[in-house]
Length: 275
Image (spheres, rainbow, N blue to C red):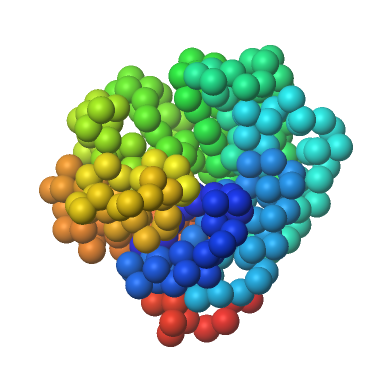
């Protein structure tokens, strides 16, 4: 399995990050894409990738819509510089969040457009966040998607009509532990089977969205990459697919989408050192 979105630079992992990675390996995770959510956090994500460890780490470089008010031209230039590193495999997390509105909506749109332009300029995939803003996000993508090599709507939580629109725009879809939530994820469960095999990706969004289907329930609410196996199993059940087959298929999709080296698919303890 490959976790395509984990916020491993989050301070909640500072005390036991190596143990978290060891547990991920033991659970069958072969690689992780660490999410960059601001210029400082993207720099930290890159540093984590370079520290080495029990499994290969890659990362994204971006400015989350919550931080869009900081999306100055200098910040975009900083992302451009970060994106030159071989460990950086996508631009983002960028997008629109009209649920929390922690940055003004016009600034969210402008910051997202600047990052989509950067992804197009660099020929890199876009790693997208969208919450309660499907119409605005789809409008942006109708303009920018033809110029992008690829795009994934990470942590998808939308409705069937929104999923169809993203499919029409040739986007990949990332599924998290939201699908394991009996309070909020029932609608998502209904439409997960309609995602084409070649467009499906899985992720934890750790430390957020710990799967509520875990039994026994963990004592902590902090999510971590080891629980990607629970997301895999729930998604496989919804799609009437063998979990191992679904894990392998989504991992192969992740390698293709992020242009990862083939050793990202190998059991980490037998894989060659990361280049």
